[in-house]
Image (cartoon, rainbow, N blue to C red; front, side, top):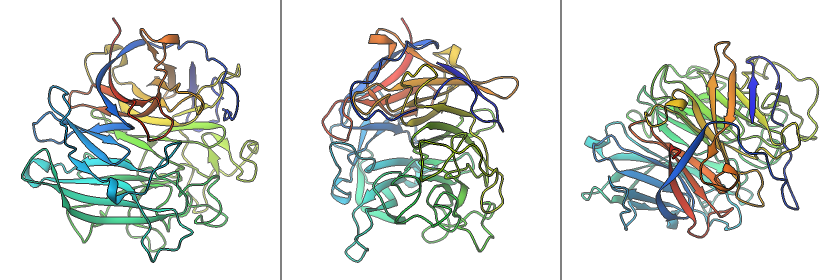
Length: 442
């Protein structure tokens, strides 16, 4: 599949979506992009979302398993049997059928080799005094490593931030330290559908409400303040009518994001859509990405989410111009073939093993249907006219040249090589989770 999108223009050619609610999904045509292969790195996980690597010279990979485990792979990718950290007793009980909650993010402090500090994002149960209409607490917490470098100190938890989630979905949860040394954290719009209802700001939704943190990517200084400080150059740091932590907003569920390791260190985020469209954004300081005025490049009406209006504002309620995605695709293509249901943000490829992908943004989609595991891996490149061209990568030696698994997340090692976390189960249950490296086709 291939599509191009112009900044400032609506969606033009290629991909279009309908959620498949019953029956068997129609088969999609084979991918038309470059052919790569996947090589198993480790298996036996439940829901591997990716991994984080501390800058300590150890060459270990710390795999994030959504069920609440951080699992170490040694430099030879052998699994350390005892988890680095087990958060299961501190988390909400997860549904085996489908659940977006759990352990969602992990980031090591840039000076981890000296201070042993790392940060996690997960869903904790409500406190006894919390209103029972809410679903859970989205928690950002700091831990420290123990004297054993392969074990965290479970008693070292320091909670930095907690948000009462009105619904179970749209948590975001990605944690990443930027090249500026500050911690970035993605937060969904609170959940449900349409950014309306209980826990969502009347008329404008949480996505357009800068007085709360839902529907945003925040940026904080974890080396100052108590429990953290707002960097003075944050876009709304001096605005009494906004949360100073916000770096960008107008997002629905920016589940995964990453900084480019090279070039301009641009911040790429995959923002999951609702009924019709998925999007990838280049996130800039103070940017408003349009939710819930728009879904991708389509206008959006919460009362008729499958019937986009022909016209909608180009600015948000605060007067900021809405920023178009660099990539947008519908859930079904122009021929009615299923294309995806939830974008999964990835990384700009900066490795050497796959020269055809050099400088391209590699990302994915969870699946073409909730009914069977049929995720996709895409690559997108920026053209001279600043549009982006997107293709689905073909997976060698696989039926129909596809993974035939749910795509849960991506990871990038210190050499710029890419990995994809997958599962055969729709929800966080079982042990079908496999971490693959994306490698050249034979």
